[in-house]
Image 1 (cartoon, rainbow, N blue to C red):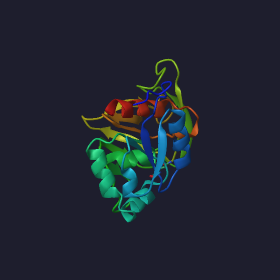
Image 2: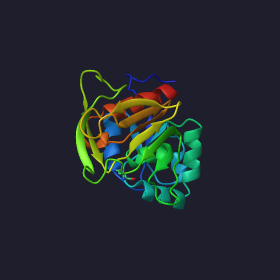
Image 3: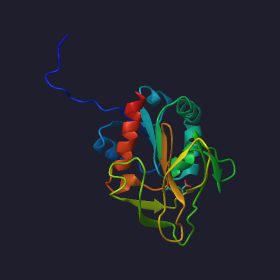
Image 4: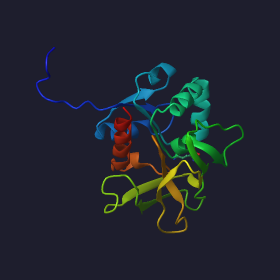
Length: 212
Ligand code: GLN
C-alpha cells in the first residue's frame, strides 16, 4: 500500500445528457465546479455516475431521443432510486412530474413534484435576463445571480415534496417560480451554464458529494 504524496481531491463523476441542447456549456461549468463530466448517450454510460445534468434545449426533442436511444426508462429508474439530477430549462421540464403546454404524447422523466408550463414567459419576452436571489448557492443573500431565460418554462405549481429556491423579482413575470429543489433533484428555468457564474453547478456538485 503506498500513500499518495499529497492529497488530490477527486471530484464526483457527473454525466451530461448529450442527446441535444447546450451540452458543452454544462461540461465546462461542471469541470469548473470540481466535478469530472462525462457525456451520456447510451444506457451503459449511466454506469458509475454520481449524478446527471439534463441540459437546456428542446424538451420535446430530448424526450423523443431519450426514447429512441432506449434511455428514458433506465434514466427514469435511476432518478427515482436516488441519482442526483440537475435540469436547466428543457432539463427542468424533463424532471417535472407534470407539464402544461406539452405537445401530444410528450413524456418526462419526472421526480420533481412540480407542474411546469412550457414557453411560459410568452412571445413578447421569449428571451430575457434578470437578476435573481437563489437559495442555497454561495453568497446567496449578498450576490444576486444573473439569469438568462430562453423560451423558458416557469413552475406553475409546487407540490408538497418540492421547495422553491428562487422566483423572478421584478417586471411582468414577478413572482414566477424559476428554481426548485427536492432532495437530490434541482431544476432552474434559466441557464446558469451560459453566464460563467458556476454557483448553481457548485451547489449541485455539493448535493452530489453529500449523496455519496
Ligand atoms: N422551450 C423549450 C422546451 O420546451 C426549452 C427551452 C430551453 O431549454 N432553452 O423544451
